[in-house]
Length: 240
Ligand SMILES: Nc1nc2c(ncn2[C@@H]2O[C@H](COP(=O)(O)OP(=O)(O)OP(=O)(O)O)[C@@H](O)[C@H]2O)c(=O)[nH]1
Ligand SMILES: [Mg+2]
Image (cartoon, rainbow, N blue to C red):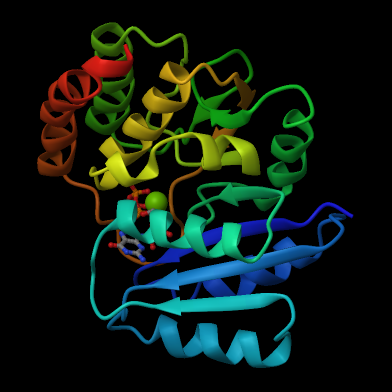
């Protein structure tokens, strides 16, 4: 039997988390486990995660971290935990329904033909929420193009955070070198995966805006990621 883990990092997602977990368990995936990584959310998401775990202890795990330590380290701790638990494949996704839970099956299916599968907004059939502000749409597609050109990556959606990983891919890439947070984390992970010669396949997705909870996005976050792309380029010169 194939053991699948879905890692969901949360920061203030109390309204989203219970319905997300419910939707994920409705999927037709054998031996499915969910790992929630909560950073002591002020809205009490961590306590809600514990309550969910109490209902299905064999299927749900929770990692509590002491404060907001960032998305990058949340995923790295999450991946490490899943590998230790014997996961054969690991899915990463946002808790806010920007990533449609029904697409998880398709992402996993792609692992039969590639080492990593990536939900993509920028390939045929993929799209962005039509209600997104013009500046945010523009920045997102510009940011992707900019990153792809600098890092010379054959992937259309380098900042997307809806991904599925084969165990051997996560074991084969030097995770201890990954230092980015936020969008840059997704870029850095895709970059080393590509540099290490693993195959990446893109699945078209519709990226919905979050419907509950407050947006944490800002121009500052995007500018930081854009600067970080150059550091990523130099940090991996030894394996380019
Ligand atoms: N554990 C943990 N989770 C985080 C952190 N920052 C964001 N998240 C979670 O990571 C996922 C993606 O973050 P979002 O805040 O949705 O980022 P975004 O989609 O760029 O922006 P908005 O949806 O507009 O807020 C969500 O599930 C968040 O709750 C963090 O520092 N720690
Ligand atoms: Mg979001």
